[in-house]
Image (cartoon, rainbow, N blue to C red):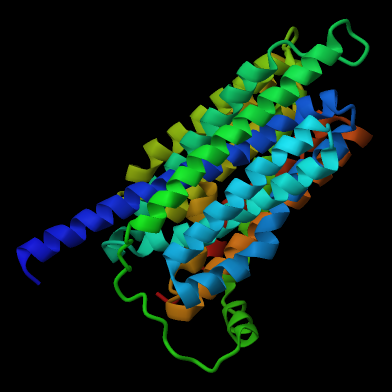
Length: 418
């Protein structure tokens, strides 16, 4: 290969990385937007917090159903087609929010979130392995964490936009409630229309741009069934324990975000829903800072040790949250996300360690399916909050974070030969 060919190849790879990294930003924005919608949706749709948490079930449930189909598309048609499929679903789901908000139809809004998340799940199933493989193999974990950092940037933007739309929250029966509800629904509609337009433009760009194929990405012909591959990799201790850790972690991460506004309003005197939503943007900022600051550190210290320390600190902070100490506990919940930040991509890479070829792709799709934890655990936490109190619901999350800390220190090494 000549120097000119190498420069062209490098240029194509850089363009591909920029485009794909933008996709990380896009699904990060909508993911946290859904979390921020919980409290205002409950208020203006006049539904219970548990029913409002069905937003998480609709959104993250899509990951369970779409991960394997998305990986099949990637294997048969390539990553580019898989990403375009994800973008198309994203646009359709976003546009479906127009009739849902116009008719105040919560069921239709849940469907819109499911289709939007189907696009996000398809993108994540394709983008994670693509960005990991596109470059120096020794920097795979670094690239994935860096790309996921821009996912965190998207997490920041969503709540801040919604906070501006919500403004001062009025309760049913208050003067001006109907006008406030109309403003909230119209604002939500405009946000998703903007998302649809932006991603439609990106879809058009993907249609004309040729993405480079990661080196060594050719499929190896095999008569082995998917079920046989699944059975084999689940016999690997650090992978199986990692899937459990990913399921628990993502559920706790999303559950905390979903309950943040309600918890803050209750424990921080004078806090309004609009202010709480803006504060959720600060939580996302801390989350993103945690990723950007910690990613370079992973070149010096072992990722599993960093995961263990961060999750142990998070567990302590969640105990403080569970004690319900007013502003102090709200601040503790916010700071926790500085350490929660690197959890999922680090667990993801630790679980896939040593898996290659088709085993790695099968493992990646299973790990993506584990994101269904974000559909199940927030509903459980919301039900506990309804039945008992919200501080108990958040306090018991410390147990899950202790497991994730154990996985970092011990579980991620099980079954790995020295």
